[in-house]
Image (cartoon, rainbow, N blue to C red; front, side, top):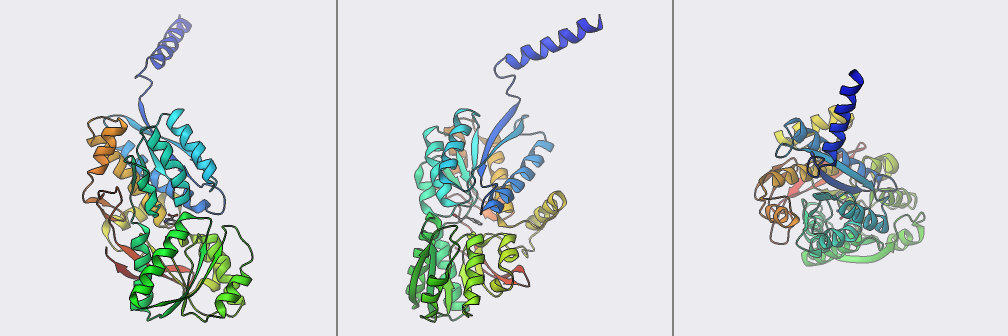
Length: 375
Ligand code: PHE
């Protein structure tokens, strides 16, 4: 008899799961990010922040009564991998929306896929303008590089009275190439001079020849719009060559690994970012304490942007007429004054966020707040 009841319940469960719609008790969203490789902290921090947002929305009952389920893939920092995992998210997992990537070149690989399958994609942190130009399904919750380049140039020229800059960029990354260009344009407009421009490829180990050429031009500052692992190596080798000029860079520096690898060599250098750990606002600090409780570490800006992207997406999903890509994209496009941990967010007609930037200085192994620049 007992077996009969058990059998009946099991059969009933199996039958229900087989009914289309009933198995859809959760709403699937995708995340693609570099969880391993030389930009591993980018994907890991984003994932941590996003998971916090998911835990919060699920604890509050989910979206329209359904729990959010995360499907996450590692891009290993490779554009090819990004393209294939996003295809999997869109065709196999059939997610409602996709969050990712951090690195612009990887978002540029994933965005055309999301656009093709009409699945909204939100990059939390890719700043190259071309990312959202891939189509009307593609959004971001951060500022773009024409602004970030201006912010860095303004800081160098106005706050630091720097008159000459050398540029050392990563020619393998759309982000680095674009940000270098924007910095140069803005710095020259302020009246500054670019003394020399040198290039490297992500993962290069020896920067001696390029840094020696830079040293010969004796610049006030070296602009290095790269990712943290390379930047830390550049800093170490620059100091070995006796270069004392500070380095200046963009959000790609944002990782606890920068000071872990760079040590003393990166002290006194500056970078622009989306959030400052010192931001006293209540919404940011409440995020920081939740993140610390969960992960035992202070979040970087990527953690906060991952969190905000999740929050924004769930808010839009709840408001949207339906969860079709078209309706959801229309709801996302109408975002105005959304209060995120990284500030108030409005999506403009190009599907980019309009937000302020901060400049941080590396001091005693920590990024310290210096100033804010508004759009
Ligand atoms: N903005 C960088 C890019 O577009 C990625 C990044 C954002 C890295 C924020 C760190 C922090 O490639």
